[in-house]
Length: 252
Image (cartoon, rainbow, N blue to C red):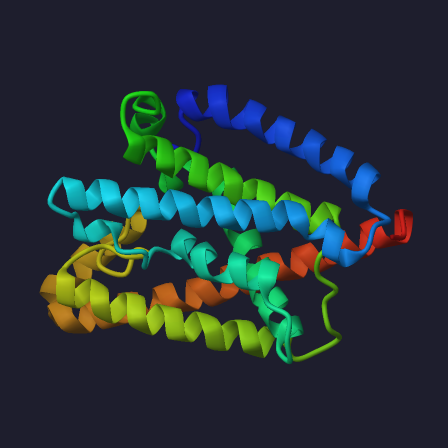
């Protein structure tokens, strides 16, 4: 189970260094500005993600359309949560920003820890020859930059309580939709049809002849949903800790 390929080390690692330096520079430049100004870089990223997605869908349709390109993957959540966080102003602003920060943070850490699971070395190699490969690489790098900017520019102030319930409710809706559509279309959205992590996939396959396909699949889906809860909430708690540290050292 390879976490980082040589291609990821050569490309993602230096890109991450540049993202961190850019985030620090923007914090120094915009850190004391009004929230409306500080939000602009994330608004730009949100628009870019949507434009990239339109391009991906058009490219897929031009080839006969691949069901895998339906935006029901975990990282696809950013297509909904980041624009909402960047542009929504209303009664539920706090909840929307908490969900946007939590999903963006989870994508950041998942990509940083296990980039081979997020996009392959083949996507990197095909960057200059395939729009779909380029889209995959650019999309996830922009997602990482968005989270770094959320942290550096203090774009979300966590509420004392209640946010975890909202995040879990949102994830529940996503997991139900992704799991059901995965089974109906026999397509692996967010890992709900089969697992890309070999040890876990081996367990899923081992259970099938013992208890039957659907009982084994149901156990797998419930377990994966619990992993989504734990992963997103866990890293959201880390985000809150980082933010407290930054706020204490350099108040904005």
